[in-house]
Length: 272
Image (cartoon, rainbow, N blue to C red; front, side, top):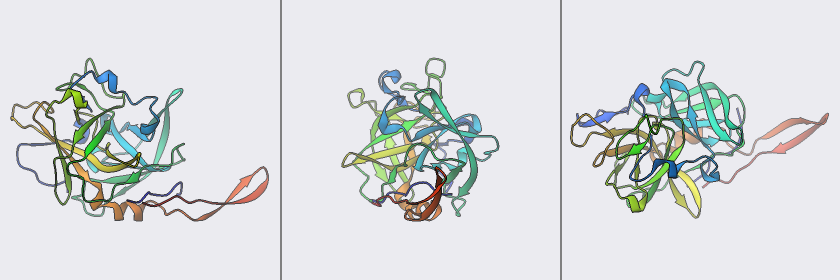
């Protein structure tokens, strides 16, 4: 696994049972137990996951201090949109300067470039091929609920997290079923979570393994997500090379004015 360095300037056709999470309906974290016990605010490990105001509200994750990885379908129009991260004063908002879409229009990934650096170096990417059987950490800013969305009680805009085992993978996706295992704090994505990350923990470090895309309506009752439904993430390991090519590499030398003096600073970060 490698880490993207610091600061510098398909959609597939699924079977009819699959509910593709569109921008205005982008999926939040639905849980088996009390959603408010899973808030990300104040938790250092999730400080690089933020709220995107585009398309009614969705989620993104920093892969460098100036670059947000999210789902293409959730950010069709970024005009006037902001990316917000929780801080001590509430939320710190960042202006979006540019959008870099994956060259294959069927790949549901986009990188947003911010106008200024966040106070977080960005998460690394999980590039292994052994995701199946591992416990993923699902994070998002959408609506929540116990078993199904309850937007009146648990509205979007608050970061929440939970856990779910990655049951299967394909060339482009990771799959997680919502079995309702409260003792495991199990979770699945809901409305407002599109573009958010599923992390895998490697030696105590959180790495982005998936980007939330869609959830199936398993029993075809028109309600999703609920118990038995399956969530799909874009498999990051398949597209890591494009992400590394899009986000500037570390190691460049930058001239910085500091106290009237020109100081050379070398930026670098480990790659995994």
